[in-house]
Structure formats: structure tokens, C-alpha cells
Image 1 (cartoon, rainbow, N blue to C red):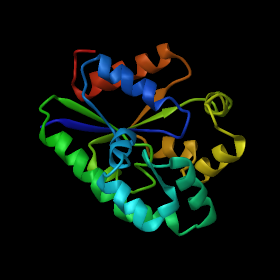
Image 2: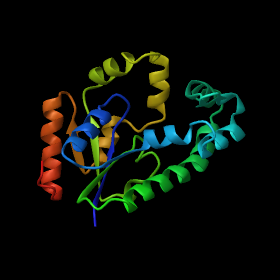
Image 3: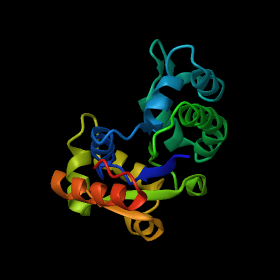
Image 4: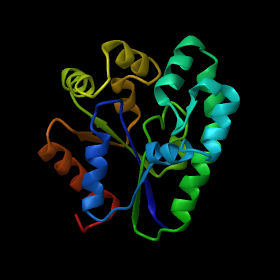
Length: 195
């Protein structure tokens, strides 16, 4: 039976970098954002759900995330309604990933694991964290990101301090070296000695 490790952290904390380090050590990584991206492609089941709720967020390439974000800003009830319909589709994709794997450790990159109350579905949760100034610098360097969009996203997430309090493991992503050090320690503790 594999050890199921959720990997989470607020926007800009370095989850993707941490996931890449786990993958380098041969740990299979399931990415919630990638699963949603697939579900939001043209004709996919998630796109059909969004079309029923926010027809203006559908384009030739499937779901237009910018239009969807604007719709969520305008309607506070939209996010919970979306989650209610999209998350079962994401959960089915995750279950399929688990069923196909036999490695000792599986990592699940899930930005909102605590917000969704899903932490009980995993054997442990690792929170990726860094200083707030580093986080803001990383996020605001992204194409199309504004301070207003960052604040909106952060308003939908638990604070970093709260995530750290709930974590089983912490990964300091201030540098690649600190992240790698913490990931090696996690893998050693949960029994994957390849790291």
C-alpha cells in the first residue's frame, strides 16, 4: 500500500518546484491543476459543467480561466457551486491515478487540500512555504498577474500560518537547496530511502 502524501501551499510558495524534486527522486506526482486543465479542454466533462453555469467562460479552447475568474469575482456563490460539480470529476481522476500505481510513496499536488477539507484522504500533508515577500515577488512576476488578482486568490485560501499549523511536514522553498533538504527528510521519514 502506497503512502499518500498531499503537497499543498498558497500561490507562489513553490509547489511546482517541490513536486519536480519529488519526481526527480522517482516519486509519482498527481497534479490537481493539470487534471483540471484536462477537464477544462474543449468538449471535456468539466467544460460542459462550466458551460451550464457560466456560458460566457467558454471559448474555442475550452474554459477561459480569466473569464471564469471574473465571473467568480462578480458572484460569491459561483465558486462553491463550481467546486460541488468539478471536484467529483477531479477526485475520480485522482482515484484512477492511485489505482494504477504501486510505488511506496505517491504525491498529490493539491493547492486547496485544506480549504476543501480533503486532508483526511491522505496519510500526510506537506506544506510548501516561504517568506511573504518572496511569495509576492514570485506571483507578481507571472504574466498577466496583478496585485488585485493576487489578493483575490489569497482571499480564497487559508493563510500560510494556518496551513503550517495543520501540516505534517514543512518544505522551505526559499531556495532549491532548502526545498531539497526538506523533501529528502520527508522521504526518509516516511520510508522511501531512494532519496
